[in-house]
Image (cartoon, rainbow, N blue to C red; front, side, top):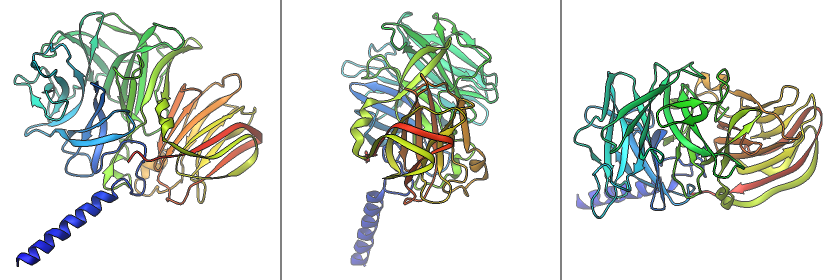
Length: 496
């Protein structure tokens, strides 16, 4: 009997080892975007940089591959590229789930949670029940590994069903903590101030404004440098609604945020279908530029995407700055330069590539970075096709007559898992050319495509689920012959 039990245990261990060994090798698994080893994830939470380590907390279900049992998952990194998966940081409580929030390093121990040996990390999150959402504190004295709940939680409770996603930052000018928290139904962001993170005073509300088609959530208010203007910065407010995001740019005077962009126009950090709940590291190792990360998924089909044993991933880290273009403040988002360290080899490099209709390149990859530059001709639609080996490809292009950048996955890859997914497949945004030139930086990572246009003036993120061997790449031009000035494609290494 003992021999049988020993053999059963050995078989169990071998099976478990084999399963773990195969993690990050699954079909559709991103290789240079973060995803947890197993189970469901959504919003990034508590992005904090502390003593040379980037901490990524995120909404996480420890028990399954669909939304539920919301807790804070945890991973850390030294470079925002290579991640160490860590145990669940703040698990679901007995009476409530742990919804989204933020984290800060309380280096001067204003909260009093620290001691002579350790400065505290402070997490502020929403405690969610079916009838109430309130704001709680937790603190860690071991660099985010273990967390203790504040004895006098909640620190803010308006006794409302919808009141969530606290975002804390240090406000230098006021020598105090600043909080942005969402009033989702009212489409407002409320601002509070505190000296100790425990006692909060209401300052003002911002909104409704911009896109009010859905509930407002996941705010993040931060100072962002103005590009090419040394020492100057503007305040940027990120927030999410339904399955999209928007941003406002303006000034914060210590009490109120004032939007300086046209009030009748909606500005989005991402114009694709699969970018949500992005927040930023306010303090980084990259100078004064905040670095944002968003959730790559869409609430309309998030639970159904055909991935296992994980569901949900994070975007590439984006360095943020702002620039005034045509009298509008535009948020510029650029992938970190350090991503270049993941380039394995150039699999295609050419100049002055002339294309009429379609040109299949001698390059095959679904794990690559692509750089394109060209001058779209009037009345033409031109660009690139990914997963173009068979069936319908993913199309990334520019319609010159309409000045529109677009991405289209209609019919591409597996679309059967959810009817809404294929309906939400074509996305476009107006983008003016820069002296007639269009520059695209594209990252294709198994099931995630991120597009950055004209040095980050526009971004588009989209999921797609093609067969593994469907990896051809083609250029196209409809309406007239186009010449692509430069085309460079690099295979990208896995961070796992």
